[in-house]
Amino acid sequence: MNKNFQNRFLLLWHKYFNDAELPFTFYYTDKDGSAPSPIKETPRCVIGALVNVRQGNSLACDAQTVGCPGGRRYLGFAESITPDFEYFLSYGIESRMRGERYVKSPELVKKMQEEAPRFKAPAKYIVFKRWDKLTVADNPEVIAFIATPDVLSGLFTLARFDNISRDAVTTPFGAGCSSIVQYPYLEKESENPRAIVGLFDPSARPNIPKDALSFAVPFHKFVSMVDNMEESFLITETWQRIQKRIP
Image (cartoon, rainbow, N blue to C red; front, side):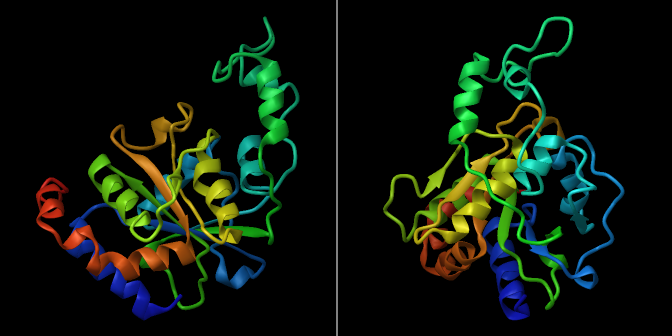
């Protein structure tokens, strides 16, 4: 991680977003020395494990330490989720499986799964670190924010500042960890990478503040956002009125 860029963002963040929560990052690596020691097992929901990361404690996970089957898939460590997942996500199986009722029918879940993107983790570990905890040895691939509506407004508008596409920011359906990891990671390869707004998943929401959503972008898109900050709407009186409401 380039320390000059790291510090530059910190200064600009505090200049325009006050003391709003810093973003965290992730990257994949095979190098034990650059990753914190993997925890024995994450909580059932990966988003729950990220609470500590947001507080400044770095985290490394691999295929053996992610406790949620969906989390293993959306972090790229497994192809499948669980048997009868189509019932779990819809109305369940009487006397045997409770259904989440996020999708109307098992048939719709199957179709959704057939069309869903997939990827394989490119290395053994995924490492999560808060922005201010990055070192020169780290190479973040995705930047993720847990943001309140006013902060999210700023990030959304900044992401579209140099991009006229109507879906420069998008909200794909999926588990909380898919919106933090899978979808923004896949945007890395796009010529015109999109930002991903997420954490609408009711199962994940108890792990984040009630007035927050996630916003995640590939690192190179984030660099362009930072480069644009000082010539964007952030320097206007319009933003100053909003900024006064940001703690």
